[in-house]
Structures are given as structure tokens and as C-alpha cells.
Length: 212
Image (cartoon, rainbow, N blue to C red; front, side, top):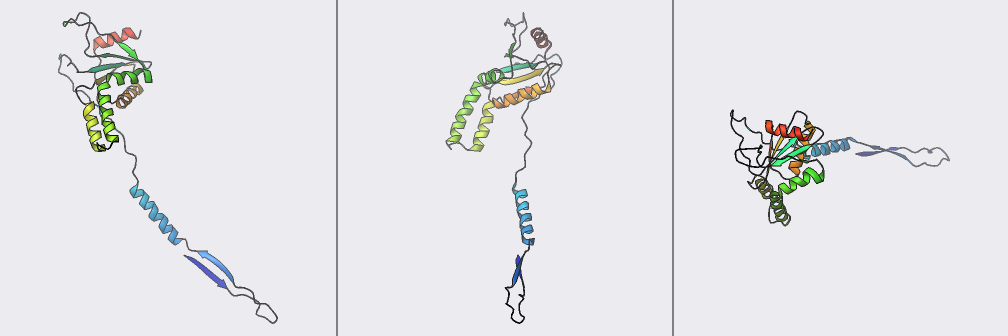
């Protein structure tokens, strides 16, 4: 609250002129301090602090001894190794002269560029991406709520028609490569991600032939 203090004017003597009273202003800042603390308290209580982000990840259980690996429907296996190199194959792994008479698996190579891994995942996961785009259109048109959109989008990525990505690393792959791979899978709406599967001896041998 502001206060105005007045001081008497001089010049009351004989023949003197009466001078105007001097005024001095003093501002009381106490109410302003109280208001500042109230505003600070308000913003602290109403602010949303950054929340830690997490990613859903499937870690397989340890299989029983001598059990043959189960075939993964619509599976794509990625093998990470040194120098940021990525090799992959789709479907089941078959060795030369296998009992099913299937042609042996061949590893293909890609990279972390937009024309490499990103393009590959968008093509492999085309069904799920197309379905999510349809849901986005409904959400934009206000015919589908945000909550329903998020739930249905997750259901699409978990559908049997969507791909399952298995990430395997050798002893020369880097932690950064694994994180970059998980990030790209998230961007491309690959909901079924499996990390921590040990590379089979046959896969490792084929990979070593590729990186020589």
C-alpha cells in the first residue's frame, strides 16, 4: 500500500512567501510479496512435471533344454553386429539340407538410414500401419475418441497379421544400436518386439560369413 507523507512548507515569516508543501511517496511492497508467493504456489501445484517414458518390451522365458525354437508368425529377425551393421531375415531360419527341404536362409543387410531400416519396417508392417492410418482419420473426424483410438491402435499392432521383430546381437554389437533399433520399431508401429533372445549357432556362423 502506498503512503504519502506531507511536510510543512516554509515562508511564514514577515514578508515571506508561503511555499507549497512537499510530498514524498513510500510504496509498501508487502502485498506484492504475498501475491508473488501465491502465484508461485499456484503454478507449482498446477504444473505437469515430465514423466519418464517407457517402452513395452517382450523378454522371452528360458526354453527347456534341447527344445526346438518355436516358429514366430510374421516374424522378422534382426542380427546386430559391429560397425552399425544390421542383417535380417524373414520367417523361420533354415539351414542347408534341413529336414523340411526348405531353401537355406539368406541374410540381407540394411542400415539405420530412412531408406534402410525405416523403409524396410514400414513395408514389412504395412498392414498395421494402414489400419492405424484409418483409425487416425476417424479420430481426426471426431468419430473416434482419443482413448478409443489409442486402445485400438495398440490392438492393431498386437494382431497376428502384424509383424513380430526379434532383435539378436553378437558380442560386437553396441548398446546404442539396440536402442536405435527399438526406437525405430516404435516409430514404425511394430508392437511385438522381442529382445534378449540368444543368437543360434547357425545364425552366428552365417553372420560371420557376411561380415568377413
